[in-house]
Length: 332
Image 1 (cartoon, helix red, strand yellow):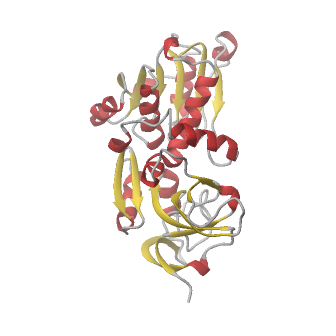
Image 2 (image 1 turned 90 degrees about the vertical axis):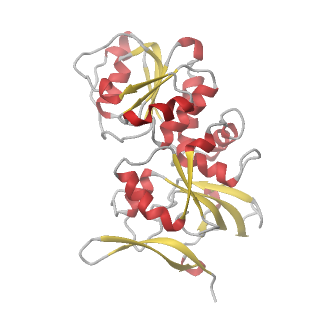
C-alpha cells in the first residue's frame, strides 16, 4: 500500500470555481522524479495564493497542491548526487505550480531542482527565507556587484512589508546600508524600523510619474512593485544608480523616459529566482546562511500549521499579511 500523507488540495469544479481542503494524497500520486523528500517546513508566497485560487497564469492542472518552497529530508534517491537522509531545499522551478508542491508532506522532484541545505540554516530558517529570501539575496548581490555600497547613499526598498521586501530591508540594514522602506501600511512603520529601516515612507509618494527625471536620491533600489513606483525610482536614482526589479505587485508594466539611463547612467537589472542556474542559487543560499543571515529573521516569521494555510493564503491576497509565513508540515 502506498504511503498516504496530508496536503492542501485545490480542486476545480465543472463551473470553473475553485475550492480548497486538507486531504489525503499518496506517494504513488506524485509526479515522476529522482528525489522523494519528506517535507519538514514549507512557506507561503503570493504565487501560492494565486495557485490556490486557480490563477491560470500559475496553475492549470487540478486537483493540485501548491507550495513553491520546501525544506526536508531525502527519503528515496535515484541520483548519485543525493542519498537518503540528506537535508535539502527545493524552491521555484515548477514546484507548487503544476508540480505537487511543498504544502504536501511529501514531494517528488527532478534532481536538478534540489540543493543541499547549507550549514548554518535550520529547515525552519531556510523556509523563513524561502523563495522570497532567495530573491532578496539575488537582488542585493546584484546591487553590490554593480558598485552600490553603503557610502554611496540610501537604498530604497519598495513593497517593504512583503516577503522579499522585509527580508531585503533586514539584510541591507545588517550590511550597513541606509534603508528607506516604502509601504502603503501606516501601521507597519514600527515593524519596518525594527527590521532596520532608517526611514519609512508612504508608497503614494512614489507614484508621481509626471516628469522625465527627478532630483538624484537613491544609490540603489530593490523593487517588487513595478508600475509608476518603478518608474519614479528610476527617475530618482543618483548618477550610476542601480535598480533591481523582481516583481509586479503593482502592475505588469511601467513607463519611463530614457533620460535617467543616458544622462545618469542608471542601470535596471531584472532578477529571476525561478529558473536561475543552480550555481547562482547555491551561492545565494550560502550567503543567506552566512553574511546575509539576519538576527531579525525570527521576528519576520509567523509559524502556522497546514490547517491554517488556506486562511493565510486568502489573507495574503487581500494584502492583510506581512513578513514571512512558515508552515510546519511535521506538526500538521
